[in-house]
Length: 205
Image (cartoon, rainbow, N blue to C red; front, side, top):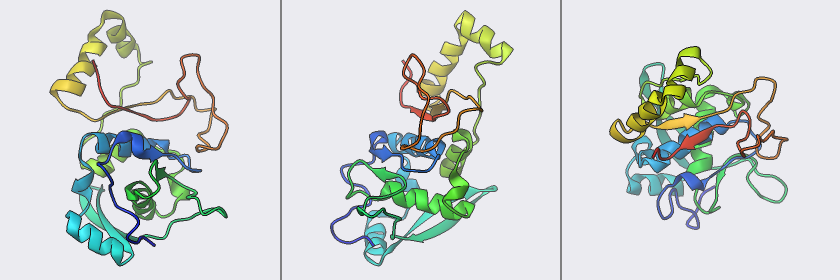
């Protein structure tokens, strides 16, 4: 359980806080990184005093969006750990900061189990965390290939990331490759991007 030695958020929630565990849920962690970077994480929980009081009692409540409604999802603060007492699933870079594993646990409860989180869509996860409407852009689609060639796709992304303040994510999809979590074998492209791994796009410039 969580005690006085942990904080929900310590020194601000940032995209770099999020470390993947043994689940193939990088799409969710990318979405979590996006909302942290955009300063939207605290919209999912009660005020700081209530969060601290709830954590001291061994639970926390998140408000997540599903099937057109905001729903409250409460979870206890017990987290699956290995024999070395290290978290098995997602965690924060600072082990005393607990928003990452507890939000992942609440999302797992929303969908029925941790196993249910294996594989998914950044677009759907962002919708669940923000209540917004997501849009997927397939860069291999013929029309989008033309937009890339003439530069209009870049202008579109600039507008999304600056003027419209959209939350953006990206992935290089290859159905034959499975995301096996942080410890699994991953395929890396020549330009350093992991195949079938979701990334939060923090800036467009």
